[in-house]
Length: 210
Image (cartoon, rainbow, N blue to C red; front, side, top):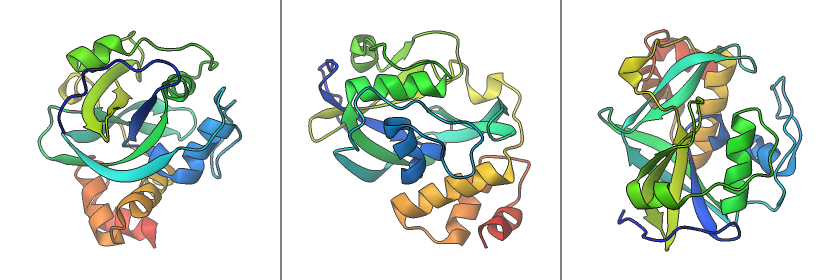
């Protein structure tokens, strides 16, 4: 994907590339419109602009995912993206406004939405650490149809942090999102997720999906 040398303003469109639980469309809808996703223990206030995504599509990006820290919502490790890991990450891209992207990022950090993000550095340089938080590093992943593709992840790399065990409920949501976005069978999804964690085998994850 060639780089897109423009910095989106608040109303401009960007692709939010999700590699974690937001691949599940209903869960992501709660980040936009507000509410509590099925199976979650925490609600979301929603975005200032509650319109649904203009478009959604499956994408793959270079790198890998891993699980670290401890989510109070899922009671286990969270998914993070490391572009320097070998392989490819199956993800889901949502076409949203830059303001919606900022509000989703705020909610991922358990903050109130409403503050726009300056995406200039991320789009121009490929990476911008807005702060030390777990999802405060913006990555520019190229573009689609003239709109930049962006995601957020941790400022550290996979090798710099202790990996933690993701919960069965969290893996099930990731699996559902992968099935929705990519139409892959359960066996493929189980192998894909097992490669990201030493705490679950493909057989164990496959059992969760049945």
